Amino acid sequence: MSLNDLLKKRNSVRAFIEKPVPDELIKSIFTLAQLSPSNCNVQPWQIHVVSGNTKDALKDNLLRAVMSGNEPNPEFDWKVRYTGTHRDRQYESASALYSSMNIERSDKNSRLMALVRNWEFFNAPHAVFFTMEKYLNIMGAVDMGIYAQTLALLLSQNGIASCFQGALGQFPNPVKELLKIPEDIGILFGMSFGYPDKEAVVNTTRTDRAAIEDSVVFWD
Ligand SMILES: Cc1cc2nc3c(=O)[nH]c(=O)nc-3n(C[C@H](O)[C@H](O)[C@H](O)COP(=O)(O)O)c2cc1C
Image: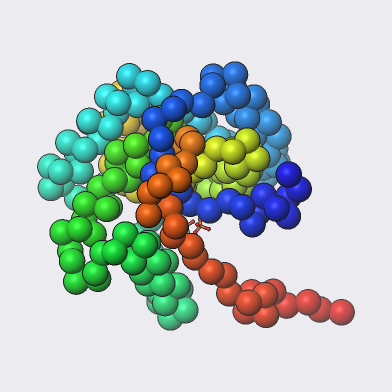
């Protein structure tokens, strides 16, 4: 599939079938993702791919942490309060998601339940945690974003769906404990991946994009 087609095909998928992706295919995809560029070629990404029993145990521990009522304690600054156009787009993307599931904006309980699906990995057979040394801060985060998009496109090329999830960096303690991630390494975000559940209405969610004139200026 051409890159043009891949870019049009990829979208966030939030319901998966149980069928796991073959190990060899996963390894070949992550091998290619290593080709991602990074500042000074530092390659800051330290990636954890969880499947099977480890993923199930992690899901239980994460749900316990989320339901405990404790505040999220992300290791990087995710607390941006979007304003203006950014806020409008944030609102529109949430609205696209909830209306695909027939959830009214006023229905806080259903919205909460939909949010909690993040920490169940949306039933995906695999999840990724994108971690890096904390001191790298924004320089590392740029490289991690490039890596993650490379990965998403590689997955998509192989018929594998995914969803980036900032939510997976919100409760780092159970993840770090189970995956033995040291203190100086932080979880930036995560991603669930697997084969899409084609029957799930949540997967009909689509977002649009601003016109090119709103984002790009060409200078002669
Ligand atoms: C860094 C990042 C974090 C995200 N975090 C979440 C998340 O926690 N939960 C979720 O359901 N979607 C999450 N998304 C998905 C975005 O909502 C989605 O990419 C956006 O609405 C555009 O839709 P598309 O991916 O279908 O093109 C995240 C995307 C990115 C790039």
